[in-house]
Amino acid sequence: MLGLIGAFFLVREHWSHIAGYWPYLLLLACPLMHLFHGHGGHGAHGDDSNKK
Image 1 (tube, rainbow, N blue to C red):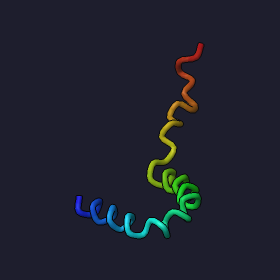
Image 2: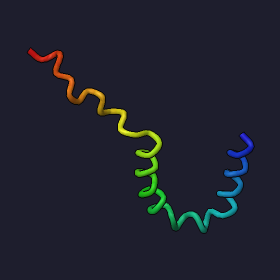
Image 3: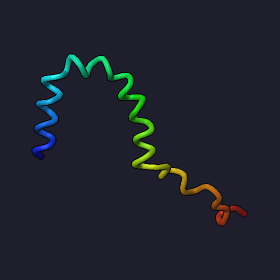
């Protein structure tokens, strides 16, 4: 909780510097989500047991 409060005040004080980097931060979010979350939605590939 203290980290969130500290991050809030840090972002609030330096918002003018951070605002120019939003497009790059959004592009960086995609590989980071794959790194930490992975491909969880691909579990049904190769499961042919229900087909007749």
